[in-house]
Image (cartoon, rainbow, N blue to C red; front, top):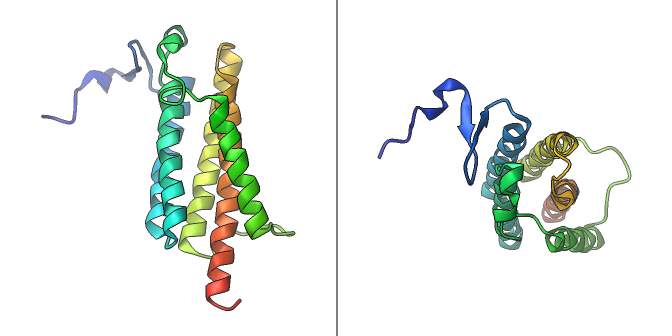
Amino acid sequence: MKIYTKRGDDGTTGLLYGGRVPKSDLRTEAYGTTDEAVAALGVARASLREPALAELVLRLQRELFVAGAELATAADNQAKLTPGVTRVEAGMVGELERLIDDYVERTGMPEEFVVPGETPASAALDLARTIVRRAERRAVELAAAEPRTNPDLVRYLNRLSDLLFVLARHEEGRFRALHGD
């Protein structure tokens, strides 16, 4: 099996459930950015030493595939999506809020500006956070152009970036606790 199809050589790409759009399309930019965030989270996960946190990051990577699938589906085909599988649902946003609250309670939050990079894992989480923020901006642009865009999708990306900030601080706090800082 060859990995290349040559169909995108004309500058277009296929969408889920059919249709083609330019590779520079808002939709393509949005789901491409979620794909970038999945990869950045993979770097973070590979650096994490806390198994529970690594498992959570893997779960978040899989959830970003849900957001990516929704973004990769033309507005006319959105009804074909399955909540929680290929379409973000409100419960996913609520779960992120629960995780944020839990980790903030356990970790606390800094009172000053944070310069990323205290540990490789926290730096990777912060990088993923900024990529998710870009995905959110692209999703907001898409929602402005296509009013039928699922509002839970934008909310999910917003909460996910907040959670990644909190997880990066958790990782740094864990590092300081282990190294007596």
